[in-house]
Image (cartoon, rainbow, N blue to C red; front, side, top):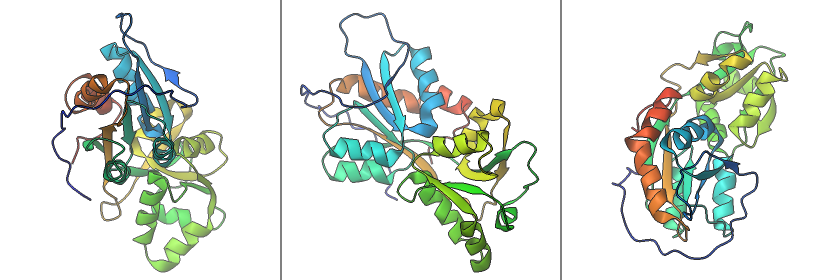
Length: 258
């Protein structure tokens, strides 16, 4: 993984564009009339922190949360939000190499965990290899799915094979895994630790992974080329490093950037 460079305040041309992002959640905004609302496309695991950030900072934000790969595909197809924030560093860097976003900033870290219902008898990753256990994981193309396969790949062959045999669903975003857990459709799911914190009221708990299995989960964000509000996007990302955004991330359980 490439090391992040300091956030570049380079001029970004403002181009008229119609944004075709579906299901935008409107955050509470400021009182300034006539200002363009900030459009943010972010990984679904960031929903709690980013919504709180916009509310507390008084940012007029339209935020769309989905799988990082899905949002990257939208940008490649011509959709131009102001900010793109992913649950890994590779996708923003790929878009940067393609000339579609500014140089990414790594703004937070996370850990992978096994989410289970509070009353579950599952206590460790080894229990997931038992016959009949139903497991939800992320699809291979989404960061949580890639991280999960990295973890399972570090296990002894027979144990890894048994866990994969117990996988019942591969979700396009981590929110889908959490949904399967809260609905009790599965017994366990590989999610981010912050997702379990956000779903505690739904009766979930987290099983920590051994440090030897833990992947490096780093979140990256960038200003999208052609953004309608590039200055607001730069300020939003800077706030993730120091300010209301950093505080919201901390309260949601995220770790400082590596």
